[in-house]
Amino acid sequence: MRKHLIAVPTLSILITLATLAAAQDRTGVLFDFAGYGKETGGIPPSNPGDELFFCSIVDGFGSPLTWDPTKRYSAATDDLISLGQTIPDPHNIVVEYSNGRLVVFESDDPAAPCGNGIEYLVADFTSFILCYNSQFHSGAIEANLIFTGGEHLHELEVRAATLWGGVFVFGYDLQFDGQVLIEGAVSVEPDTWGSIKASFKQ
Image (cartoon, rainbow, N blue to C red; front, side, top):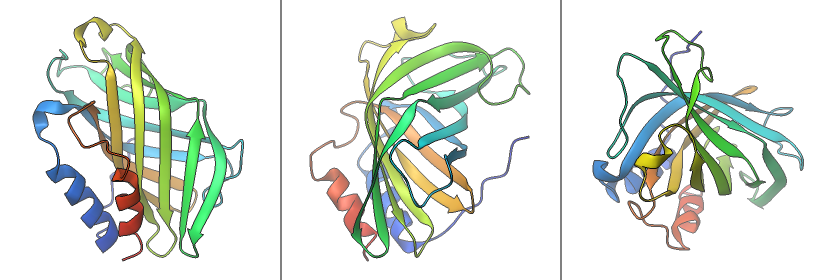
């Protein structure tokens, strides 16, 4: 069953998402995603060896990808393993993950569960970081990835991409909402993640 996403209007996450959104235009967006996930044992804390998993609905794709609006598209992670959390201050944790893939699925059944169908695109994560604020029960994710497989891989001339978005924690469940963009569509300077973490201290 697909859940309805809940908007959480915390000042820090809105500032973060608005700042990042202003730095890019839709020409670089490969796709948007929104869905739910979990980490082994719940988060926080994030212990070394815990696996982060999320499965999200994809509502469509940007150029140069082709797609069929009558079909169902979803994106899911696997083997995304926590390296443990760091605590820069009492209200924030930062978690880095190793390995992991992002798989985009295409199904002929418009009501198919998330994660079902053929592999439309497959990507390997080269980095994945989650920042979480315990006061607001919200945070942000940023990752780099390289597309390596899938039925539509041949459509991508640039195969390096960036993933970013918001994450909200409700008990054991995580809610994700974000975008995957062709590398270069947003700033990937070294201070990008630092500015994100700084916003959670406001």
